[in-house]
Image 1: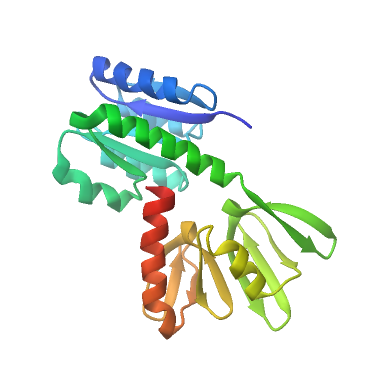
Image 2: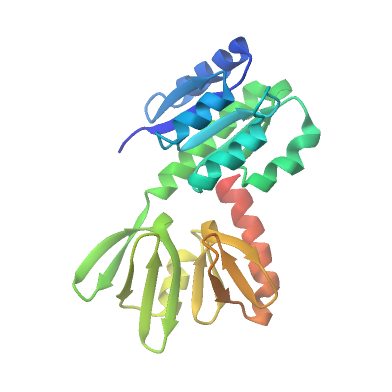
Length: 236
């Protein structure tokens, strides 16, 4: 497995090195840390190198941390973003950007270590797979890459990030296996990976690619609650 690429950006060199050194110590066996004092330079490099994690100071001259995160996420929707700041009132604004974690500089020691541990757990979970029975034989499919499962009649369609195919099984079988791994039953015919949910409406669920899936009226509240729970326990 390739090391997780972690970019740390803070315009204060001493703070940058403090954060980067501690992150490197915590992830020496699974992550590679890149250091930036210039947010514009990080943005430029992000167009050449795919970073898996961003640890960003919010208050930086020129391109601030939130604007930087927004621009990078436009091209890399799966990057995990961790904001670091002295201003606690920024926390609610920060979560608009699909923030993995918010770290306060006043509590850097304990919160940074906890965030890195959660990042490792998250990346470990991303590599978890299930075995599926396809028409051409069995295959191991990463759970992280399954966007949603659709069942129409006796046909089970597995919609993945880069492929769509049919597999054997029933919705009940998939629901039993995946309900504790971040999947939400939004409709009798649809089981959706919470990681790809952008918006829960009143009649449908919008995915991060803009596509819409039907949402049962009697599952609206349950879907909203499970999305909050999964987001906090599996991403934050």
